[in-house]
Image 1 (cartoon, rainbow, N blue to C red):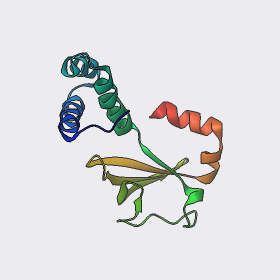
Image 2 (cartoon, one colour):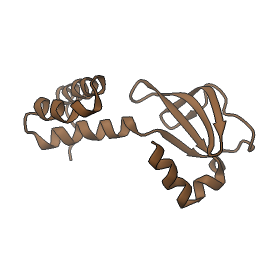
Image 3 (cartoon, rainbow, N blue to C red):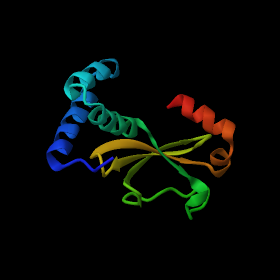
Image 4 (tube, one colour):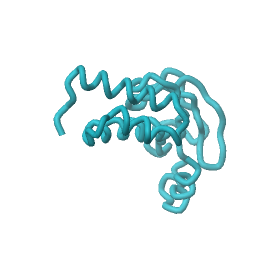
Length: 129
C-alpha cells in the first residue's frame, strides 16, 4: 500500500479524530459514511483507531532498571514519553504517558518479567484491555 499523500492523510486524520470523539458503537457507521466506499481509506482509519486503542506494554526485563525501580518522568520508549507514575499491581507498574505520534495521553504498563513470559498471564491481560 502506498503512503497517503498529504491531502488524503489530512482526511484520514479528520475521520480518525471524529471517530475518537463518538461512542465506540457509532464509529463503524461514521467511518463507512465518511470513507464513501473507499475500502483502502477505511482500512487506514480503522488501523489508526486500532493502534490508538492499544495500551503501551513493555516487558520490564528489557529495561535496565531494578525490579523496584520506577521509570523516570521524561523517559522515552519508542513514541511514548513517561509523564508520571500511577501505581503498581501484580502484573507490573502503570504510568501516565504521552503518545507522541497521536498526541494523546495513554496508560503505559511495564510488565513484570515473569508476566511478560507467561502466555496465560498475557491472555488474561489482553482480556482486560
